[in-house]
Image (tube, rainbow, N blue to C red; front, side, top):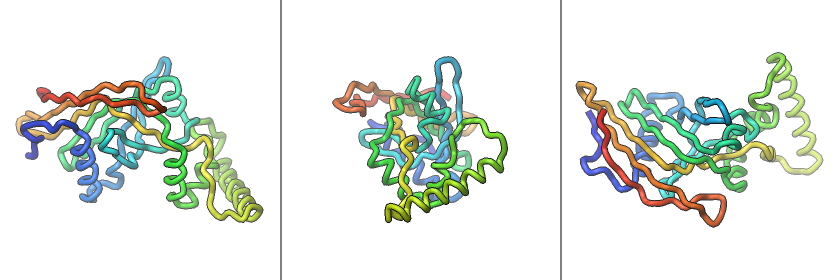
Length: 218
């Protein structure tokens, strides 16, 4: 079975990104970029699946997109420390991470939103994510009404693209810890862990320190 390099690399990010790209290229999963994202509000931990849309190896963050007013968005606003897991079982690989979630620059969110299909764009305007819903039909009717409204807006302004909702966009998860795991015989799995500190940057993004690495017993 595959093992981690005998000498762990100085940074886990290139290897983490390679594992994600390997999973995408393998085609064995419908959503190889799916990851569990855990948040902690003032009194309650929660976890859900989101899609990792990018791993930026240097300076070391990953990106996902959501409604900022959703349950996860509210939790991040209260406490931006998050954790997560990728599990590629068919490839005998798992990656755990910890970090802080920072809203992506508006231009980055605009670019990604523009790349989505139109129905998904309309859906972002339709859904007040995580809020209670009386019936499924109410949501479908709201979606149709939203589509008509956006179509009328396009006719009025002459702009054909759907604008990004101000409450929808990306998060950059700046990583403070990464743990890479590969399955081993006799359950002697291979585990490497990297940790680093994040200092205060000149802008909203933090200033990362150097990674420290070591192996863990299975």
